[in-house]
Structures are given as structure tokens and as C-alpha cells.
Length: 217
Image 1: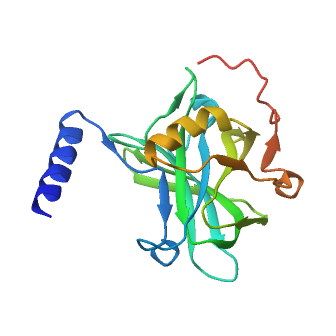
Image 2: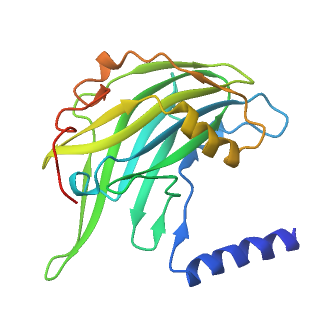
């Protein structure tokens, strides 16, 4: 245990000295975390801004929860000062983090997202802002033990000052590589068939409105 503590401390110190502290892109509430030896199902996806210029929030999240309970999990993208999630996907004008959520098998739902920002303004101090879906959507997810499910890539774009949407794409081949690095021996990813029509106007398959605009970095 002391050896593990020393290794963890050394890793944190190295991150601090390099000017960047890497945080996990995956968060699962304790009641949904399988204990050692218990059945587990994995939910895999990626999240991040399509264009930094049109997704100003430095903390973005996708929210999932166990149906009939208050417990949940989240996929996270973050780039706030020295703190960030792994920028697995970097394509010049945007980025994304791949998340792998180990969950107890059962029925879940994808129901919301969040864009969170903390800005310091001279004279006003730190101003916090948060944006979620005005009308919640519920996309059911049935997760079976011993399987890994791919929910897709969600690339965000804020179309106006108070409205953000996601472009959904199947990037399973690319994201599987990063997921396997996080969880060696991860089962082959299986696609989840989501009824994205139920999540409009927040999520669009293919090209989201405005995504084809020629926005210069």
C-alpha cells in the first residue's frame, strides 16, 4: 500500500511540475460501481467541442442514471487551466475525451448534459454559468453483464449564446483503441441503437446545424 501511495504521489507531482493535472473522463457514483468479482457492464463513448471557438464551456458532461434511482454516472470533457481530461482526439480546432464507465448491469437512461464555465472578471470576481437541456430527454440503455456498449461520439457546438447542441457520430473503431488502453481486455464494443429523434434539438446524427459553417480558428 505504501508503494502504491508513493507511485500515485509521484504521478501527481510530475503532473503539477509539467503544468497540467489530468483528470478522468469517467465518473461513476459509488452505488453503481461493481465490486471486485461482481458482474460489470461498460458504457463507452467520447465527448468534446467540435470547435473550441463555438464551444466556450471548459467543462462538459453527459449524464446517465440507473432507472428508478437517484444514482448516476457521467462522461466528461474538461480543459480548464492546469486541469484537463485526456485529450484523446485532437483535430486542430477541437478535441474530445474517451470515457469508459464500468457499471453494474441493468437498465439505465441517458437523460441530460451540462456545459459549465467559471470566468474571472475584474471587479466582478469569478462568474459561474451552467447550461443544461431545458426539456429532459430519456434514451433507455439496457446494459448486460460482460458486455461493452458504444454510445457514440458527441461533439458539441454552441449555436447561440444560450443554446448548445451535439453532433453524434459513430467513431467506434477509433474510440475502441483509447478505451482498450484504459481497460485492457475490454470486451469488443457493441453499438447501442439510440432513438436520437427523442433527443432533438440537443443531439443530431451526422451534421448538426451550423457544423458545416466555415469558422476560422
